[in-house]
Amino acid sequence: MEKYITSLKELIAQVSKNSYTIDNGAKNNDPKSCFQMGMVYLLGINTAIDFKKARRYFANQSLVDNSDAHCMLGLLSELEGDYSSAFKNYAIAAEGTVDGSDNSYIEKVMQGREFLRDLLNKWKLPMRVLNNAITSVLNDYLKGGSLKEASSIKIAAICRDTPSCIIAAQLLCDSKDYSSAMQWLQIGNVGNDNNIYIKIEDKLREMRTSINFSNVLEVIEIEGTSLLSSIDISTVFAPARKALSEISTQCIRLWNKEVMPKIETIKNKWEKDEKNRLKKEDDDRRHALKQAELLEQEEKKRKKKHRDKVVSIILAVLFFPMMLASFFADMSWGQKVFAFLFFTILPMFLVRWIVIKVMDFFNK
Image 1 (cartoon, rainbow, N blue to C red):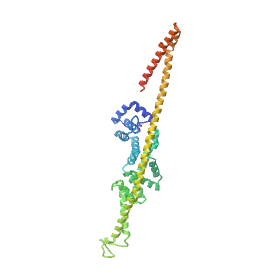
Image 2: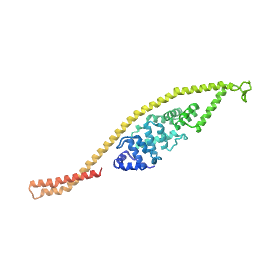
Image 3: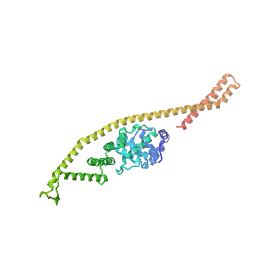
């Protein structure tokens, strides 16, 4: 896949020299120009930082199959606190699916996030733009066991989308917590035609059947009546069904009272930390860009000073014969000084000034 940026320094130089060409190329859906314009608005190169415009360029149709562009879209979403969109773009960057049909969704998210780390390291951008709390949760997922299940629930609570909720439900199903698994499928708006939904629904149906029959001992039903009496069998099962309904109601109340507030607390804390981190990262990014601009200006001054010195030496060599001629001419000393000043020194400095101005004009 073609790489549209090799270094941040090169990007700044290209934008400074060819801003019109890059902007015009982006308007014509050129993938390289679209990617470069996205970086311009993401970093605020010669313009104000604008995440919306950056997202528009990275999401251009010409970059739909570009993994770097999806990495940058994931970064923008993570910076804005939209972790559902961020995870989906990271997964797409790693060539994963985002419809919940792939059990390796979280692994693909981590792989895409590592691609982004490589890009940031290559372009010498600060790694602190990535949320350390998210990194910690994803690392816990890889450790397996109870940590994997807990981290999958945290991810589902943060993203609240179909693929992450399916992963959480799958792990809860494996640990036979079918009620919680179904709750997460409902939060993720998973359709009832999904395989994991059907599987969990079947397990819950088996549990309800088991509970209904657990309170009835050796009762044989034939055509709605019991062999032990002439009483309608429905009256025998009524208490068990009522007890199950009460248990279900209590579970729902407990979930809404105990679990949901904790999920909202976690989400609010993360949003607050994210705002503080974004502000700090924005200040750091602005400071880094300012330092880069200062270094670039100092380098230009140094090169200009060296160039001017070379020009002065060349002109001095060229005008040296005229200097000697003015000193050895058959004239009085006053005439020699006058000729030296007005026919050698003054023309030399005038030519030097003109040469330097011309070179500055063509180096803009």
